[in-house]
Image 1 (cartoon, chains in turn blue, brown, purple, green):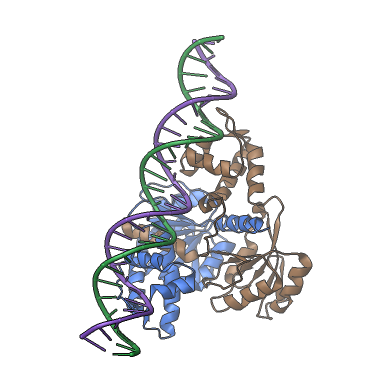
Image 2: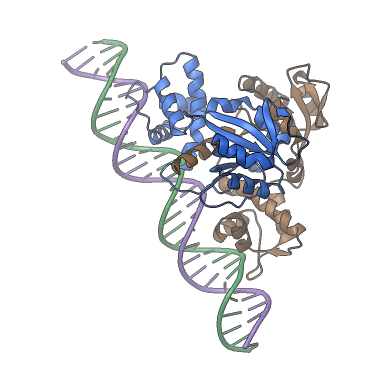
Length: 212
Length: 212
DNA sequence: AATGAATCGATATATTTTTATCGGTTCGTC
DNA sequence: GACGAACCGATAAAAATATATCGATTCATT
């Protein structure tokens, strides 16, 4: 939950961008040359105003009565989230969740390339998972330095989280995407994005309960 | 992003509850009999006031100078998110992500029990994945009705999302946890919790970029 | 060319969420 | 038993986010 890090761009806006990207890609494929905030609103159950604000934050410009150029807007959004120059990442923890993430095709679209996985369990190492090599964690630092990786994906169990995070920090990573349920403690200079599956489950559970 | 559904309890509060539950469990195991909002704040980088508000929403009561009874608070939070009476779910889409979720141990803790998986690819059916049976999707309705399942987990690809969602709705499910990147269209009576991995990735990417 | 509908961009308002403050309670210590 | 520190609970203020409104622009139609 370390999501508070003020800086101009509202967090909710950032989170909506990938959704816009998604539908934009669809529309582009369908040959839609221009798109309006009204279109987005209809497709995403949002208000046009909000879409306009979001797009403005991303630096997009549209024309009255027309909307935005589909292709140009897509590029702008990609640039905005830094997905134009594809970011490379390493993954630590080649368990069930790690394996799934390694195999998840969807990330390519967002310019994320997971280069390799690392694990403490040396029996897993040497093999490949979804075509990605698995190395022992003691090789992490060397690998990260050599390949200039700035992002680490943490998919270890709760206990393993802190040591694994330490290893990533030590290796020189700049941001950690933490899928483990544990809170990790890192220097301020490193950004942690906590991915909390249980949060979504809680929301769903509460909502279902409310309707009964 | 269909997260807007007003109802007393703030969404951010709901999302923080599982985090509280997590540390509470740890503390309980360590033999901590009472906990204060100051403790939470220190462990989670939050403000004590906020924790107090959240706990108040959940209906917890504490004592000045003491805090909250660890065990009692844990029970209260579980009850609040409806995790006291374990909710059963089916999963649709036994691909990479689906497999990971089927194997994810963490959910038991939150009272979620995935009973079975369903897939259109009949070659996958008949087998078990992480001890959960995989059935053809045409058996979904019958299974859901028979077992009184109220929750569906959607882990299919973008194209498969809408038909799969339709099948879940048709089967009589009340809430859908949607891990696919597609927006699905369902009747108002059904709650959809969109789990958007790309959102977290976007936040991380933007933050890293900002620091450079 | 004038009219009107669609839509952007900017500004203003409302709502939601977070943070601060303050009074009151409990308990350890003197 | 009085004093002070830790803490809850409630209320108030501030900050962030979402929504509404309005003027300006573009284009299709008359």
